[in-house]
Amino acid sequence: MDRVYNFSPGPSQLALPVLEKAQKELLAYGSTGMSVMEMSHRSKMYTDIYDRAVADLKDLMAIPEDYEVLFLQGGATLEFSAVPLNLMVNKKADYIDSGNFAHLAAEEGKRYGTVNVVASSREDNYTYIPDLKSITFTPGADYLHITQNNTIYGTRYVELPESDAPLVCDASSMILSETMDVSKYGVIYAGAQKNIGPSGLCVLILRKDLAGHAMNICPKLMNWQVQVEKGSMYNTPNTWGIYVAGLTFQWLKEMGGVAAMEKINIEKAALLYDFLDNSKLFKPTAQKKYRSRMNVTFVTGDADKDAAFVKAAAAEGLVNLKGHRTVGGMRASIYNAMSIEGVQKLVAFMKEFEAKNA
Ligand SMILES: *Cc1c(COP(=O)(O)O)cnc(C)c1O
Image 1 (tube, rainbow, N blue to C red):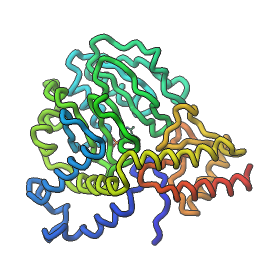
Image 2 (image 1 turned 60 degrees about the horizontal axis):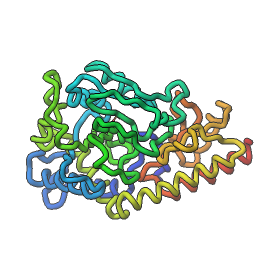
Image 3 (image 1 turned 180 degrees about the vertical axis):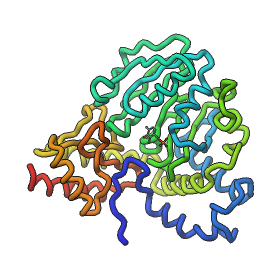
Image 4 (image 1 turned 45 degrees about the vertical axis):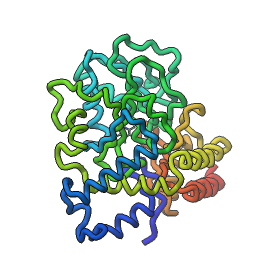
């Protein structure tokens, strides 16, 4: 069976060489005679896989020496709770509400202390990133939380806010798609299923001094200090997920690294937005300045036409283009593993559909 072009927001398309390598090694990894799924997480063969994944991620993102990389469970969502549980020493934190996941993170934070939503675009259905210059940050806040790419609404930060508090970033739908200056952040976390690997896994990049402050009620498994000491292995980690993540990191290095991917991603996004800006049928929904390079949201303005488009595209092997119900219309998620060719095919099909339906 032929593979489709999968524009799913997550879990998303993985790079074909990653899947092929995992397939090739599925029954017997190297000379071990067993699958990665069957290995002890404490074995030398597995810790080699783990160590290489950590080293390759550090290399890809130029992660400074004073940061730790952890592979945790519970996806990005469990970190909505882990962040306050580990960082809310003074019981107050700032959040910028730029989308659905940003909102959920802030709501979760409220269980553990005072959450100040210092800026929000919620009233305008999150079509832009709030103005960062006009924010008054809370003195003594334990951290400032942002969601750097808003997966559902298709917006991205074009610059970072400047607060005195450590910057905590949900990078789930943009990690490894563009270069990030890690030293500007206290914590970066990302659910793996968009740009890294299987779901359930969360990559956490943590400035070392931010570990060791967890509340007493913090479950031990969610305590970053414990996980730093145990090398992400306080309990059995998602061994298979980490292995596939490692394969993605190797593939990214072969592709030339994050800066090379960023170039391709800019090109992919431009292909779609240039078409949308000139289309007689389709309209982009996010404000131009804040357009995401990973999640491109658009509508026709007619729900029946939207549905017809999504259906017709799927018949051509361009699948999972339906937008989130809160935005409607369509969303093309074009993470690292989506090729330029896939985006070209999508644009060509949109042109065809437009000619018949505008
Ligand atoms: C997908 C996503 C999440 C949720 O990730 P899970 O792994 O399902 O918990 C959180 N934040 C952002 C920005 C996302 O895109």
